[in-house]
Image (tube, rainbow, N blue to C red; front, top):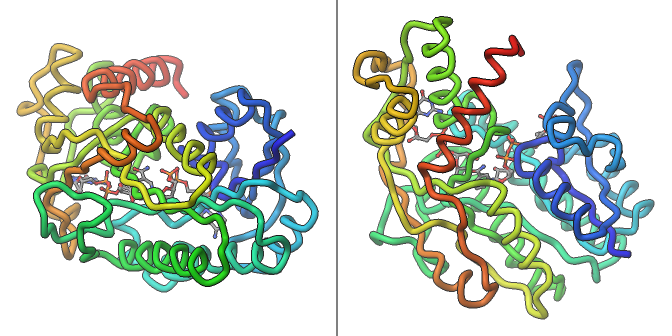
Length: 323
Ligand code: NDP
Ligand code: GDR
């Protein structure tokens, strides 16, 4: 039986990946960072909270990682834990650097010390491309991060490459473009929009305040993207892969899709609020997933329309139930 250890198991991707690995017959362990509130709602939503084994620890505490990895003896480690909200990274840059950047090195050091044959996945990001230098971004596109989050992730990416080259660790870096779902945190723009659409439709909210709605993103479905993570660790040779849909859409058009779906005009409700502008913006992202499609046989299965409709439906149900 294969055994996986997932950091960030309580996050959007961690929950979907845990479900996928359980379906494949894995024993799944996860890292549980100490919080004063319950963070298991995503695992509960997928009905797998009792099927995974959780271990107290933190990405900034390398001893906790060494202890857990020694005990669990995983064959695969997926490092999905991070301070992942770009906006917050300007308010908490040091914490972001420690968790999202040095946290990667802590996991790699734990693997190097305990068992260098463990396979490792790093959750890298299109935010590393930042200021765009090529119209479509691939594994060969130069990086130019635009936020403390992007800079921290760039460290995580390069330390993953470095440990692969220095110590022969089977370490792969998935450069994933934005991916969303009903389990997306409410602070991210797609979920903020679908939650507002549900509330406005049900008479519980009057307007939706957004920042830069001309920003463009390449949005896919998280459920599709965790499959690519798993595929990377099944390859004989570790590598870096861009995971994206190859289609880019403005925040404005994404809003239109969401409001149209419930028969409303987004222009009647969206208010631009400079409070949500960022000190430095990533204007446009558009991924080229050609290598991933060819080498891993992976492809995105869910269109942006299907994704946004799925999210609006889930939010309508949740708001109606008063959850
Ligand atoms: P989420 O924000 O939903 O999940 C982040 C996870 O990290 C949570 O489980 C959180 O725990 C955990 N975490 C935060 N701080 C710590 C810490 N100090 N120690 C241990 N765990 C911690 O992110 P996603 O699921 O959306 O993303 C997964 C990964 O992929 C992240 O690394 C993200 O940066 C990256 N990524 C995401 C993309 C996307 O579009 N979703 C695109 C590209 C990369 P808790 O629940 O307790 O807060
Ligand atoms: P992003 O996602 O920064 O791309 O990072 P987010 O959904 O936060 O922003 C996308 C774009 O929308 C613009 N925007 C707003 N964003 C938010 N959150 N709230 C608003 O009100 C708003 N108005 C406009 C933003 O300026 C931005 O241009 C996500 C995270 O999951 C990262 O962890 C991951 O690495 C990247 O995706 C790929």
